[in-house]
Amino acid sequence: MRIEALQQFLMDSFMTLKGTVSLFANPTNTLSVYDIEDGLRNDKSTVLSIEYIKSQPGVMDMVRDRYLAPLPDIDTLLQSPPDSLGYAYATYIRDNGFDPAFYRNLSVEDDTSYLFQRRRQTHDIWHLVTGFGIDEESELGLKAFELAQTRSTMSAILLAGGLVRTLFKTPERLDYLLDRIAVGYRMGMQAKPFLAQRWEEDWEKSLAQWREELNVQVPSTYVP
Image 1 (cartoon, rainbow, N blue to C red):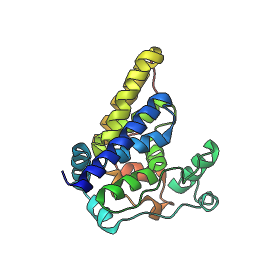
Image 2: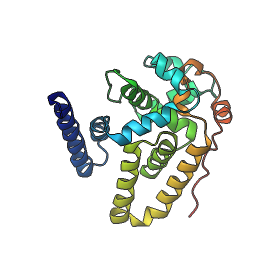
Image 3: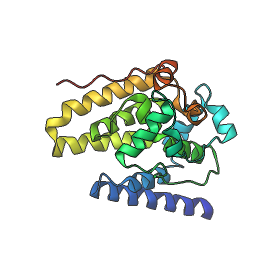
Image 4: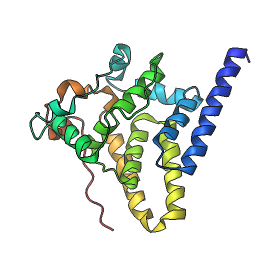
């Protein structure tokens, strides 16, 4: 192994280990998720995931263009039609006290870093279009959707961790979690590729129209 490759391997391993330890210590720490994902960027599973994503219709156009939208202006989006994606996004960010720039930025140097960055940039849009909430089980439902669409190693790790954590800490919520995971995976398999969408160029399109065009069936409320 050449010295450069060895250095990269050691750095990736350190990032993965650091993120894993941090995630187990504090499952709500988003930065630990990024540490793990960044540490796995050269792993075989990630390479295969990126190949799978790029094989989907419309994604290669995004990859070639390195399409990344500027940070949205929430006040401007609040002037959008009430049924639009832009208005839904702005109210979602405002009402939950979120920061639209919460995600860790990556220097886009290759297809992998581009797709990582684009997925991070549009995470909250995925929430809105799929209809998944922000409770832990719904977050994992979205991860199941993401796994179906991207074969992401990080999604699989978070799903596995969520199942284990629920079994030991909140076993009474296991049925709800399994329902959200099953629903999310089916939705992801049926929907058109989200990473092929230039959401920010069509903020005024209605949320209902986006869902219809992408074949998204919003999950019904869970009933035990």
